[in-house]
Image 1 (cartoon, one colour):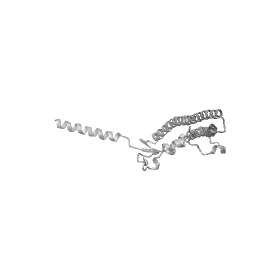
Image 2 (cartoon, one colour):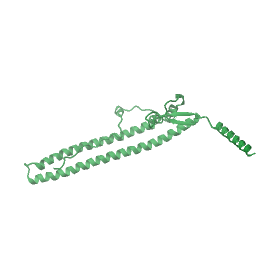
Image 3 (tube, one colour):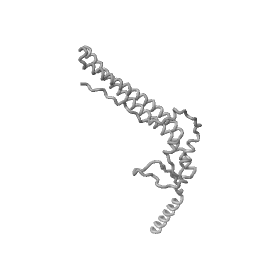
Image 4 (cartoon, one colour):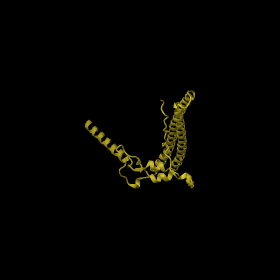
Length: 222
């Protein structure tokens, strides 16, 4: 009797498993290049223009500061020469030496100001870029999910980045399963009309991180 019951229970469990297996929806995969969608989003392009403008202004300020430091360094050298000149009185040489020390302090202050300004500008740009990226990615993900659902997809794979081995995550996929173009079209449906920019605005973009700290070192004390 017990053997019969165990057999019946086993058959019941097998039947339930087969029923559950048939109840699972068929796997349907679609792919999307998230990096391409993000880069071609019109709001990303607009943000990049603003970031480049900020970076350009910052670089111009650093260039001017660098020129000021160079000029101060030349003045410092002249004062050092005066402090060593035997043609001047002892009092004049002492004054030149004191002025040279003040000029050295000014140079060090300007160099520190340049480094702080560079660091602060980069941090601000990185923070603004992250906020923008998070907002745009949230919008893109919603569009991806909506399109995937409309297609009846059960799994979406991002094909934009390489694996830990430096090779594409997706080695091959049927182009008909890729929804990148659909997503790009949807997220850019509200793109404003393109207005022709003046020649001055068509200059090569500036890398927000491409700042150079003024590299001027004041002459060492003797």
